Image (cartoon, rainbow, N blue to C red; front, side):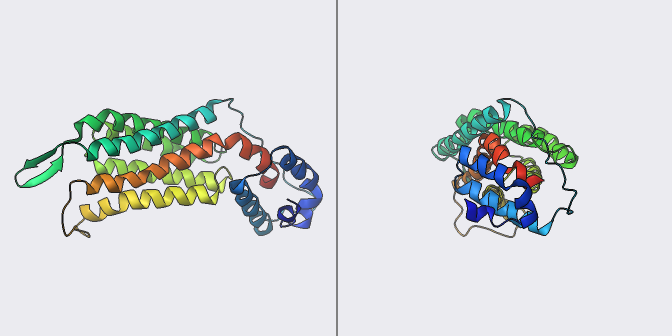
Length: 250
């Protein structure tokens, strides 16, 4: 651990090293925590404190067990999302006007519940952000409402893409505030890109499958499970991350 702490500037170590090492001894970091520590060291070197007048650490936001519970609920929503895709892929095929598609009505309740659970997680992440992050909180509330529309009408893919775009705004704000790691942000971004990118390309005519398959959309949407995973994991780990990252915020 002393090697990782050694990445920080000397002025930072003189003020926080003993406290930080004590926190690490009490809560041994896992690989994601180590990435957070390295990110914090880079930030401390790019934005050094003024010698002699260091800024006070940002106080932790205490919300009791709510964030962690929201995280577990979001992770459960990810399981429901996978179940939604499985039920949809195994639904009967309907041929209408020469076009074949899956009648995925049986998956609708699972779809609705999974989207609602992700919305809860997104709002929990937004509420954990520092006070200046008003734009991200606005994006979270707006996206949660649009997401509810998508949950009720899954064929409105534009609503779904809007909701996930808002989620990315919230995630970037959480990353900038030190609430998310770069790995969590990357997982979310890749999952949303893989899940929404092909559908967006198909909608605007940039991509047309050579052999249309009624299951393609469900396989593509399955990649969005990364959003549930990243949001849920960030909330479940929030109390521990606060304890290990408080000194790095100063």
